[in-house]
Length: 185
Picture (cartoon, rainbow, N blue to C red):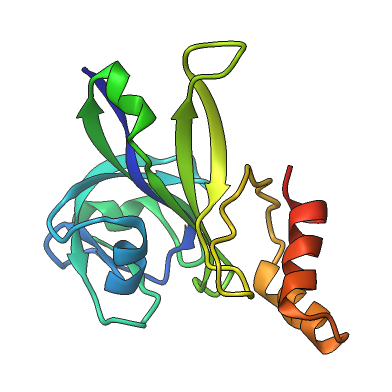
């Protein structure tokens, strides 16, 4: 068995800290559902701003609140606005990596969901265990956009790009084609 990532919230910003609340991290249940993180589940929390790393458990806050509140001792590791990576792990046999598809949710600066991705392990011509990142969000045309690897451009608002392209007169299929051509590999 190997320990692997099972679910990840990437770039979620801290909205509060409560030193006197019993320890945990309070998260928007909608964010957790998107990634597959459960209430009371232990997670690793990595602060991109300070480098602090800690382990705690998840409690759900108000749905739709976009909250990320560190509680108890964890409150000392962050400040409002810090970007976090929150990761849940699992143990799998190496041969099960081909069917294991961890979800990764990335965020905009206001904690709105930007991308829903999956990590995929596959056998390639070059090696038994190869890797790619796949976009899982529905396309504007109603299908699934996850037809290939995506490039994770930091601070690029894909939704805003889609809206701008729509306003310019492009139809959903043209928008999907543009995104595939210019923002995926």
